[in-house]
Length: 294
Image (cartoon, rainbow, N blue to C red; front, side, top):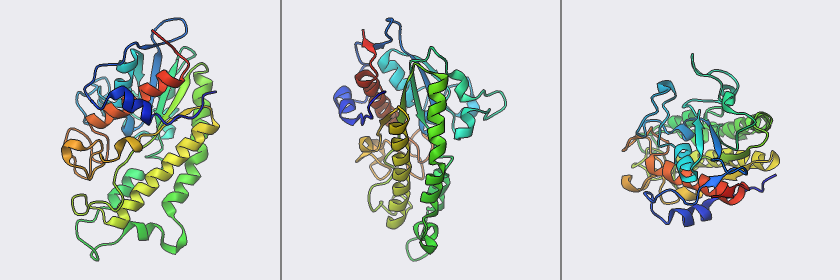
């Protein structure tokens, strides 16, 4: 099976620092010369809600046609089936999330060449954690979410992430079973807040900004470790966002803050972020999937 990969350096070389660069050439192809068949699974980090244009085929999923799966597919010249859906948990891979929305696993088959997945943020309530950490008033007014969640000496959020970890291993095994010939790419969550935060520009006290990012990193570590154990490739997106987190100037952000300044959902990748993540994924596929280039 594949070696674990951090795709940052290859993505940087590929992008040439230009978000609007043309798609890669030559494009990746399956062993028989046909375009790669690519299925994208996951939650809102993959779906990029409110990033235009919207995928009108399923408005309840709030999926963008400029999310990272679409960016990667265009760069690879791959045939994409994007079933990522905002709000998805691991349960929605095997069960319907909304009436009329089939389980995400249904998109997989023996003909699938590439699978990407970002999942776990909703299972471990990371978005709710971030919201609970918002403080519009300076210290000492309000309460620190870091202190609340570690009261008594146990980190409740870290414990919840660790308890969920075996579920993701089961998810990867299920993907391999349903798409036995596919290379699987686990795309990690990104760089939301820099060390110490940037209060009051983003309404998280310094210790709480560090706590939120620390839990995102903890979840990323769980995803990375599971990928290594279950025959998948991990694509690190945190390093891509250094200097482009929610504390950056609005035009420089890949990740929106508590209040979005662009067409993107708060605390989610914007169009630039999705572009960079998608190109990192495409670079990983081309360099390490074993696919021929044409």
